[in-house]
Image (cartoon, rainbow, N blue to C red; front, side, top):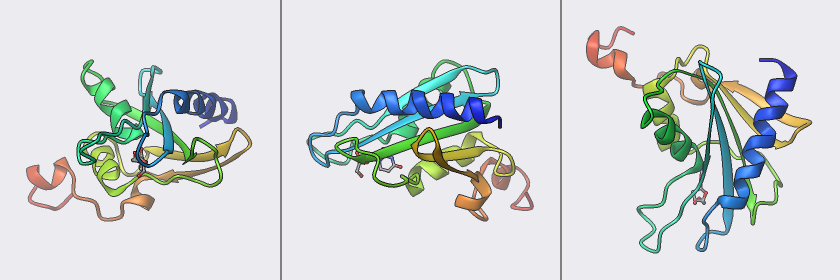
Length: 144
Ligand code: THU
């Protein structure tokens, strides 16, 4: 992916920090999900007084896209930190990695973790979720 496109995704993800609803953890996360068709779906984390119903920024972005009929994706950028201060990289939780596994190719889907427009790392889904269980395992008896 080109540097300019990465920068633009980082900028969009950072902008979502303003919408993160985090009265409990105070840890704000923003995401920008790039679909195959070039559209970008945004997300923030949304917490809940009952804790369990809280939703991560990444899944917010995925579910927004999928609920609009979009199921093919190229990359996601994730940023986060205490009170929205980007002190370090925010890797996606295990549940979010599994949601990525449902809709994205482990070989090509890129996960951009950033603390700023000039400071980021890019991973493939297969690096963050090795030997993941996905739709292929159900359709081909686990040979995928
Ligand atoms: N969080 C995300 O939004 N994405 C992740 O992958 C890591 C965790 C959120 C969930 C919760 O609102 C807060 O960060 C602290 O765990």
